[in-house]
Length: 449
Ligand code: C2O
Ligand code: CU
Ligand code: CU
Image (cartoon, rainbow, N blue to C red):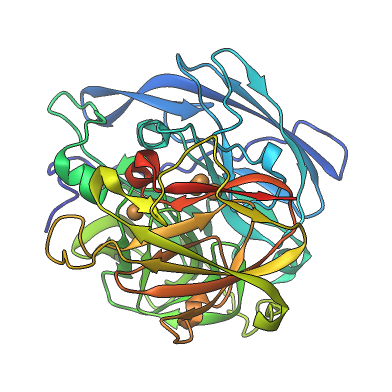
């Protein structure tokens, strides 16, 4: 078993990112301060790795807000280069979205302000500088953004942060013998996106987590640049997925494994009540142990509710337009609809408050199966909006994809139809969330007004 590619690392407790304090005392407002900075971190014993982080050495704190809040975030750039902060999954106007148009110069502060008007969800934030997203995220710039609402707060779900409600940011990295995480792309990385040899959970290799003998909620973000994971428990036990990218599913979905492409999230509930105190098991992906669970602590007794929320289905009849997006090409030639990203070109124009069907297909593997980069899945993502997946190659999507989605995998020779209502105005990106593909140009711009 590849022990995360690095044998002999002693186990450390899973780092739990801090919850970022709200500096605004008024009840319906929230104000946060984030600083993008350079640092170092000891991932491997005795080796200091140069890193980037928000308010710390690697990754960032969790920003938690409530639906209805008026939120301001002050983002200070203390890096030696430009950056941006994009709120992935957040439904806000383009000027606050943090895409490539809102670069923050060295030493500057950017203070977007927005109202939270979408259901409880586990979102995230990361840089989005043109052609530089992959490298900045790789060095450590990413954090979680939680939305709670009256529905999520009333449900009897584990919600004690860091105790039975655990953030898990999964990322793969390659370390040199000096412990550096150099962002050097080999040919294979250019084709497939960067693939690491070690898998970090919240920035730690081979961590362990003490869990109560009961139900635990794991909020999993695939924060990797490119890799697709197939998560399961080492016991092969079932678990329940309760939320997808954009919020709660209507009903918990019982599963044995869950696949997440880059940038996708899943909230799952694992039941540890059948284990004895002191027992251990792992969260795995394929044959890799990512995180060891040690049963130790109070018993809890949550019953997973049968009904989580109501999701009003957007009727395909309400769509005024169907747009087609085709992933094509390989390596540095990756593109959408035959075009590579051009910051001076708007690719798609939409009218505000209209509903559209986006039909995304993947022709990138045509005739090249078996070659590197041929026949690979690309995760499609669009900013400022949450979709409902209508179908995959004409078939109803799996039950855990029947909630809100801002990112979805499109497999070779597959067509995914998704529907959304575009309520926010401005310029937004759509792209493949394999960051090396995005940076190479597998991205376009849509304007809503
Ligand atoms: Cu995760 Cu264009 O974003
Ligand atoms: Cu995004
Ligand atoms: Cu791609």
